[in-house]
Length: 174
Length: 174
Image (cartoon, rainbow over all chains, first blue to last red; front, side, top):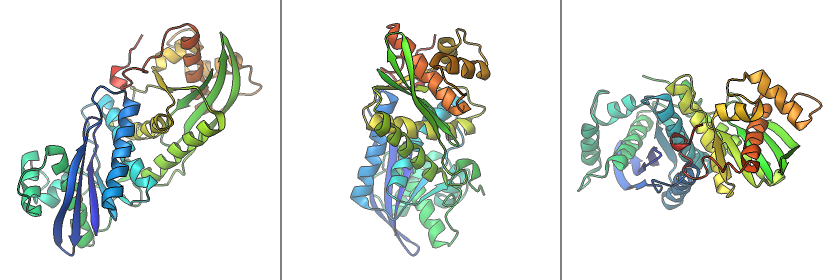
């Protein structure tokens, strides 16, 4: 099963692709979609959307996982982030790729083993778990972490959070 | 000049179309895009996006205007609203329709004459300004109000707020 993880952001949207066979994980690819920083928001959303569509065409994942970002500094930041996340999710929905959502805590739990891990620990474990020779960029590592989290939930038969009521407000938190 | 106004929301996205000739306004059409309330968010975003695409195909507007909603109850609500707004803006950007943004205060100022007007006043004035026989639904009226605001700014030569740096955070407020 091929899984695409996405770490959405209006400035940088990371993506990471892993193959999961039973409990084993294999790195396939990763990268960052960076809309021109000074472009108007509509144009940046289009770059994010079309970038995700290109990633789907290149890697043909069976499923996608996106971090459910409910911790935003303020309503304004959350609104802008929602635009970017919406553009990515829309690209997935338009190609009938099922979208699972995981809270940051669930991603840390899956990758490091506890939900209070710091960012650097997550990135280090992503590198170890996938046997990468070098450290991927921060955004790409976060995307790979979400993909790994989904792979673990799949192989553990824990189901797909968010696949039912994927409204962030309705997502199950553990 | 034909203008499409949009009032985005994850439950209901209103749209309204007006023709502006000099200082004169003519009602063209309006409606509400309602994704199935219990559908997952990705599916609802797709309904909003595809609904706006259909509206563009039906009315072929020259420009679009969207309310810049920076007043959200909380970061969570703002995040969900951002998704919906992003889906609508993305549909416009994908069809090369220029998108202007106006704050709620600017819309009230344009339609009622002062920025502290209540919702019912805005709706009543939309009906009067466009000579409508009956009151449009609340979401459609709000969308028509944004379109009227854009028409006024165009005819007054005030330029297009948000047409440059359309990032909500960068939008000029007056």
